[in-house]
Picture 1: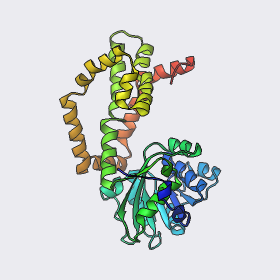
Picture 2: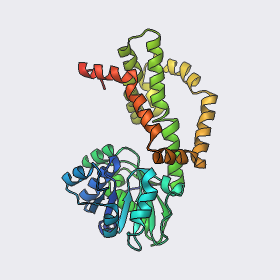
Picture 3: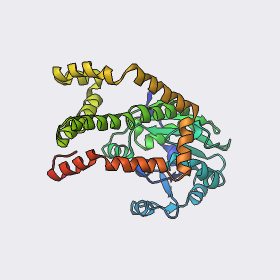
Picture 4: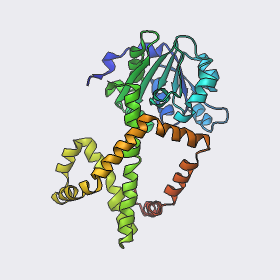
Amino acid sequence: MHAYRDADADLSLIRGRKVAVVGYGNQGRAQALNLRDSGVSVTIALREDSPRRGKARDDGFDVMTAAEAAEAADLVVMLAEDEGHASLHAEAIAPNLRQGGALVFAHGLSIRFGLIDPRPDLDVLLVAPKGPGTALRSEYEAGRGLIALFAVHQDATGGAEALALSYGAAIGSGRAGMLATSFAEECEADLFNEQAVLWGAIPELIHAGFETLVEAGFSPEIAYFECLTEVKLLADLIAERGIAGMREAISNTAEFGALEGGARIVTPETRAEMRRILAEVRSGSFTKKLIADAEAGYPRLSASRGEAAAHPIEAVRRRLLDLGGGT
């Protein structure tokens, strides 16, 4: 797979645009700051009652409603919550963004599952940094960048790919590499990963391991260190060396334990469940559930957040932080 870098991008393309960043959360703030530091004109679009308006103003940005920002811009970056894209686009963006403008997304969900049907005169782009906004910003400030995926859904002007590369370079990803994909591939792989590997499976494994040790009479603090603290060591080793290299860096005892235990946890049934999760992602079933929860006021998400906050592992974390030994 070819990696596009700064040398492949023309920064003058994005510098010649008036950019409206919709949303000022993790990605919105980082991308807006990086764009501005790369010489791009940026306005922030937020609801009039958004608590993030003050932060955006403190950072030196002009803040408008989405409709006002879209009317003043020729490129709109959709960095608000995915489940809110449909109404935002219909009510504020589509009626106001000028002819021949561009829509940029950091995630393919709204296009892949038809939450948004862009006007045919618009370039529609994906630029998806592979990491959180905090890392995108800190890497940029350090003179580095995060790898990003990019794609073109709609090339109305004939220059959509060049504009995507220009945007990616402006947020710092040209320093690390920009890889071509499609909206569908990025979206489906990302949704699968969120559920079946990172944000779904790993925290559940940590909880289950912690509970197993505590139920067997181990102290909660020891269970915490064994099942949670060392996850960072694992992630750092894999990031630095790969999985095979990680195994070379650990003790023979740990490596043999991995050999004995790993396949008993990730069983053929686990893999079958992963395939079912991927099928649900591709069918749109997951997206329908997400939208339904949002429209109902997030009862499932709210309940899940409450359960996570009430789990005994969080009390252990607070105790260890007080002792200066937590992470």
